[in-house]
Length: 126
Image 1 (cartoon, rainbow, N blue to C red):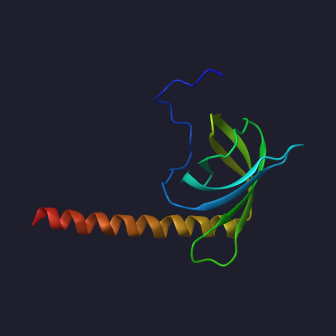
Image 2: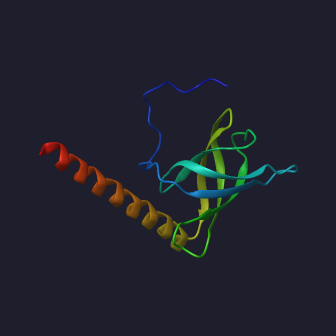
């Protein structure tokens, strides 16, 4: 399958490299499933390295385990792109509250990361 020209960004939301455990299962006659750590995540989707190659267009059930939260987040997605074992999944069905929980986790992790950067840059400036 031909690749799209480099330099073109089609995503509508910024992606963050935030660790998050995800269990996935395809809705196919012979389901593909696994448990992985996401590569990156955004408001509208996520990417991960699957155990078995997924195909563009596949519907995927997702169960995301948010650290510090007792309840998992459930969502449905569609494989938007796949290159070898790496896949990008567009979220097509997720409860508003669950999406908020994911975004809150991303924001908390982003704040921690930026606090560490500020401390490091202050040490360098001294």
